Length: 375
Ligand code: PLP
Image (cartoon, rainbow, N blue to C red; front, side, top):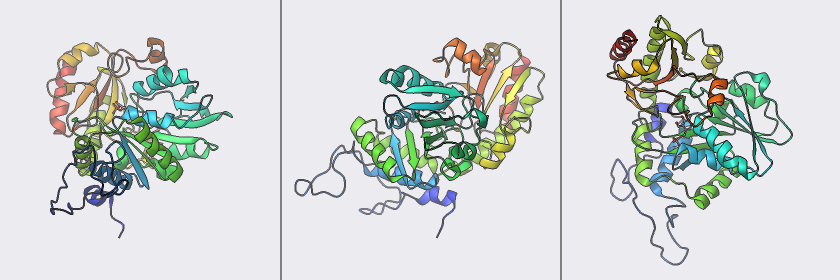
């Protein structure tokens, strides 16, 4: 029987514990496993290589992304790093020009010195996706962080000419968007965000249908060792059981807030793919189930004063939790970008990124209204 997303999120990887019948299986807090004779064991030998709690989470994550395989990591950045280590010196990565600042930092400050080449284009414009002879990977985010640009994933997949297409699906979550079904080779997540959903862990994941890529990444997971703890795996697994209901609520709240902000005379621009005025609104409608809880807006006046007057919405890095978080990209999440790179990308000093939580939307709007009246 083909189960719906909501049912898979609750049941895949969640069979009751065989030993005790516990409906919620125990967290396997163990580094090692007893062997009957050297090399004879029940499938687990050392927890860097595999762990039952992690394995259950990986089964669930694969199902949600519509993938054969999922592999988890200690952070989103560790998952990104694992993907890059599939490449060799002189290979070229064509990346989106509005990706998470830490992805750019990893590419530029870590991997460039090992001889990999990176260039950045606006992948929301398909014509800018031009593949060089040595392009082995295309790295895109959709929606992007922080400007919420949307890339036509199926359109890029048609132009990839043998390069691996990797989509950072963190902002959408697998409930709203499934890149593998649109032709991507790998989906990547910071599970810290919507998958965990409660701002209480750091983690990352990769999903693919390609067995050879999976086996290589599984080797990298064990050989490099950036694995998540069993407790963090348990937390992500608990979080994803409510992913569908949370994403619906995040998306509904964000739509209302984006509309409210668009009407304010104190706001210069609102970036939200659910607004018909968003340049890629139609692409987003086509490839996403709803528009997620992430939006950005640019104030006409002093963002710092506005932030000081918020009472419910919390000023903090990160996103995708049940509570609303606001972030000043130029000073916080994207400070690792050189100032000229920020300007080139359109990340100004009055730009704010809001991760809309699932509080009552009237309270969030009242909080924003109050802070806007102070500037
Ligand atoms: N990708 C996106 C879109 C992100 O927003 C982040 C973190 O903010 C990451 C990747 C990195 O994930 P982590 O912080 O879990 O390493």
